[in-house]
Figure 1 (spheres, rainbow, N blue to C red):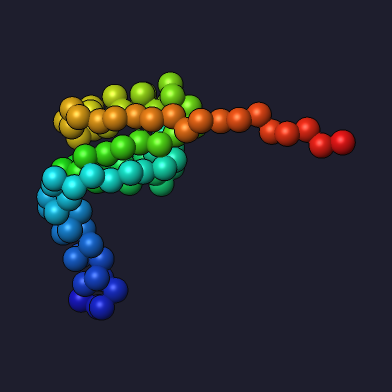
Figure 2 (cartoon, rainbow, N blue to C red; figure 1 turned 60 degrees about the vertical axis):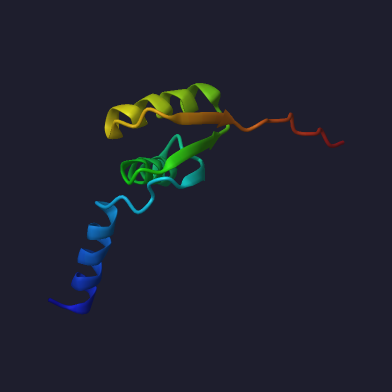
Length: 89
């Protein structure tokens, strides 16, 4: 097995453990893409998550999805405050 393959095998092994159990992680952009996948993987490892998103509805939907995907029940979703852009003349 080459060095890259061995490194990849070690990474996969870490993802299946529970090294994150009891740790709290704040994730931005948790409603889509890399943030969503990261949230799922960390929840599967036992992390407590704080989700930060611009859209509260999407954050709550992601919270429910995480529960379905990982069996995790304790999640908090926060929406980032948004402000209207200033008009320039």
